[in-house]
Length: 105
Image (cartoon, rainbow, N blue to C red):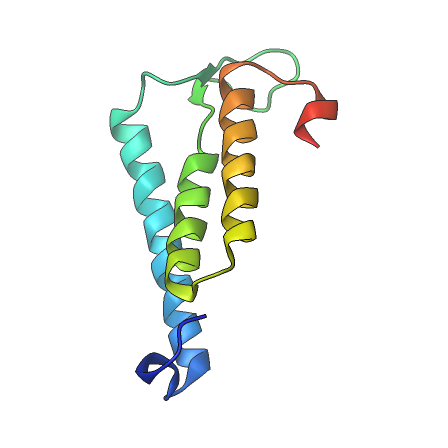
């Protein structure tokens, strides 16, 4: 964890602002991917989908980007970074090649 001046004040304010900033990073990443990232994996509508048009499949990258920003500031243990890296790897692999549920979970 980060120690020193940043925690000398109100911790709730710090972590509240961190959540807001992480959410903004997620939103911005997803917005940029939607605008410029039409080259990645696309989910085409089929009988099981809820959408009517093709949509990008890698929106989780934006969510994970926001989580990573929050973790960088909070300073988690290295094991958490390894777990997050594994989650990112499996998620991206599933976006490009549909993985069976056994591997995803």
